[in-house]
Length: 444
Image 1 (cartoon, helix red, strand yellow):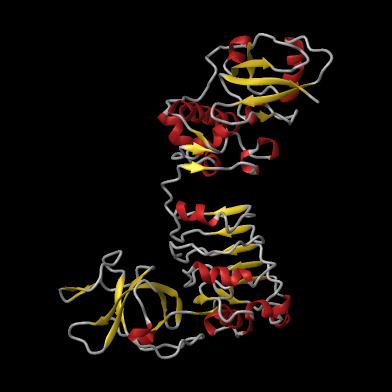
Image 2: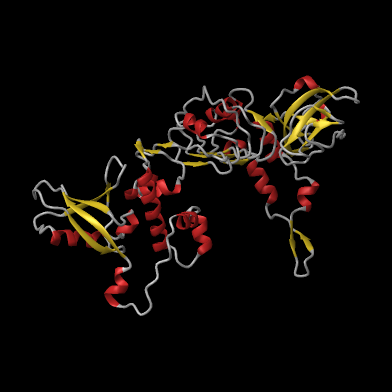
């Protein structure tokens, strides 16, 4: 039974009774804002006087699994992640501005100062002093000039009274709220509405509620980090209407397993002409997606996309397996699944035989209105052929003299063909593979 006495706490929560806590509420231990847990039980414990709060700790720093002396009070996530705590030893958190005041106006603790050191040549700790520390601290104390704030693990749980945040930090552009006690999306909205200059919001390690209804439209937020927040893909889809201008969305550590329908229309990530990737790359990297941009992903398209993706990675990544694993986490899995071997020239192979190993077969269809109907042509070309070189070849293949060709990649399942608009890029950069169809149009 844990019954720790109240320790020194830089942000005091005051006296608490058992009735101050509710099931499912996130709390932290008084004096340690990094020791965060979820309330799973409030009431009496057999053999002990008074009220207790059963907490399931996120860092697994507990005594039991929710049962004590043979009596089960709740089910914890692990065998030793839970404990019973006196209410006055728990805090339900603080308004954002209280945490801000402590973070930027408070004095460094002895522990923090002791942790500021470097190791000497003999591996001894040598204390260091920040030059201009007072000057930096003075600048940070002027909240109206603050553009970036980190309030990680400070027990923030609510926005606070309306108007106060805007009056205090009106210029804030970046806000890091990692590891706090936030869960209600209405509190998140209350914070964001008062920060009209806010662009980047980090909510990692806050366990967010599944109810995202009532969220207002936040047109100014462009980067949202929701790593390890327990968010589902259904919630992400509901949030998209409230965050219409988001350019970056981070969702690591949420165990998303049911992404079946994705729409990336008019999004740079799905537009090769704007630095994005072709449809087949998205299909290969998203193992569970069934509908992409409104088009069904058939088993055949998935297989062909995954094989083309593996070939693409193999053509670009040769010497750094670790970098390949980092940038293409499904590469090794797909390479093994489809039985694709590393392409090596046969012993003694030279000239045309060796070159043929890197050739791909493509179909060229001329659809230029001013030329008239021409039969499609199937050609074998090196995968490294540039778009500019292919345009010149098309002029020869179709005997085009009076017009300048414009090329499009036509992919199965994609509603519109992809413009190959970079003459210096190779055709494989745009996802052209064996069996691909390229449309030859004329420039207007």
